[in-house]
Image 1 (cartoon, helix red, strand yellow):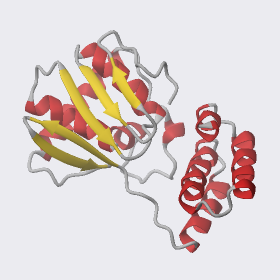
Image 2 (tube, helix red, strand yellow):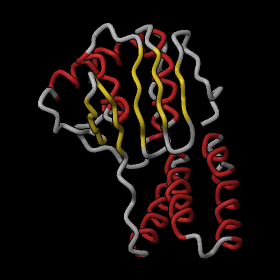
Image 3 (cartoon, rainbow, N blue to C red):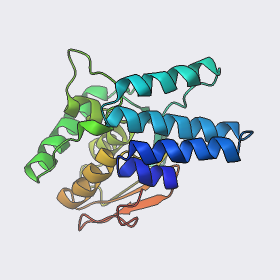
Length: 205
C-alpha cells in the first residue's frame, strides 16, 4: 500500500526506499517482492528514468520470474469474456475498437487528457499515447460491454492487476458520460464508479 501511494505520487526516491526496506525485512517473500519490483520499475519509467526501469526489469527477468499478464474479465448476458491488453481475439474486435474510439472521443470532449506517465515503455512508431492506454484490458472490456448492450446501466468486471491511474480517471468519465455504473474489482480493491463521475475509492488506488 505504501509503495502504491508512492507510485501515485510519482515519488521514485520514496519508492526505492520502501522497496529496499521490504527486501531487508521480508527477503523470503518472493512473490510480493517481484510485484514490488514491477511497481518500482513502473515508477522509474513514469518518471522518465528508463535506464533504471530497464535495469530492474532485467533483474526480474534474470530471476526467472515472469511478469504477470494483465487480464480483465467481464460478464455480458451471462457469459464471461476475457481481455488482455491490445487483444484482438474476440470475433467482434473491429466493433470493440470502434466503440473504444467513440468512448475516447467522448471523454476527451469531457476534458480528459491522456497521461503518458502511465506508459512504461517506449512507443512504437505506429502508436500514440491514446492508442496504448485505450488498449488496456479494462478499456477493451468496457467497450465490449457497450457493444453488447449499448444502453447498459451497469457493467461489472474483475482485473488481476491494479488499475492504472489513466484508466481510473477515464472510467470515472465514462461512467458519467454514459450514465452507467461501472464496478471493477482489481488486485487491490473494489472500485465502484458512479454516474456522477466519482469512485468509491476516493481516488486512492
